[in-house]
Length: 418
Picture 1 (cartoon, rainbow, N blue to C red):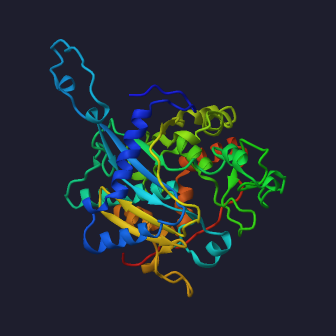
Picture 2 (tube, rainbow, N blue to C red; picture 1 turned 180 degrees about the horizontal axis):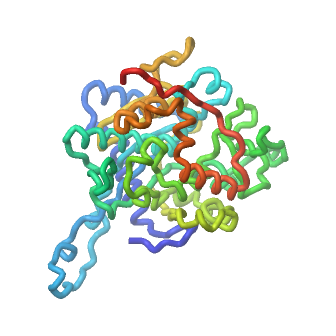
Picture 3 (tube, one colour; picture 1 turned 135 degrees about the vertical axis):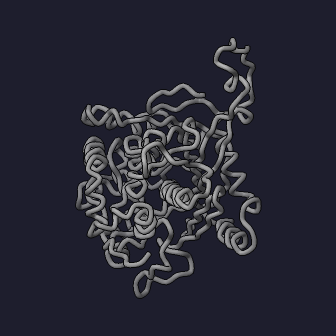
């Protein structure tokens, strides 16, 4: 397909445009999948963006189509290969479509969450969480004896794998990810030069958002505005760096998949006009590659950045809501303030008001597929049991120069009947 260059931009505009056009086709034409009330709900949420700014992200499965050459007998001489149009050689299947650019302050998380609040509503992070929900739901279908579009049983009992192991994952984002990847763009485009000043860091030693423009290659928190409440959620640049080592799988799906190497992000598709090659090389490779212990580098699978010149139209005023939509499964949910849109958190977050991609919701689904998980006292104990994954994440975080504190959000796994 495309030659890899670690941490560098790849100039395959055709593949980038194919991914982004398929994502935008699904975004603009939900009527091909959604019906009745779901379609009305989607259009209502999308219409709310007409005079607002948001970011669109889409995780896309790229599956090579089997050609006559691929299916020919091995004993026969290979026929002369002819050029095939990219769209005819590949099946491009958008798995997720998500919008959003909000982050919950630590104060709200500590007061309300107990596993029920979505901390980070940036579009690309929502897409990754939604993919893990899809994986859990697809496995549940297989357990019931039904077929899955994406997965099948693996050779190892209780494990699952991709139906087509040649599948690659691309993440389209309508803006450059926040954090180190885009700090140079933000710096050069800012009219407020006071943001260049050294305003210090959070109490954990990590730069807050757009503070310290002159410092690059460092871990940053969200959000960008200096007058916002403190969030310990790290930038999308930092989180995507981590995924180059740990794959797209979350702790909820990690032990259910036989071969984690199949679930790494292969391509990041970004707007061509905003790509800064130096920033991308530094962010996704240069700033950490010499600092991570050698024994952990075997887990590193670099992503390649692809350009697209297809524009996602948006305005200037930030939008508070987020759309979670899967064209593959017809799943739809709209979020506001980290919970379902239209729901209140005044007296705490009710189970029925949380998103299906919340920590608690995903854990309930994981326990149904692996009852051993119910033996853990709480969420933190469960996460600590994934020792290899935990060690890898810590090594990469240290390699990035220190991750600092994250918002604690522990809860009991004794849910009763689920």
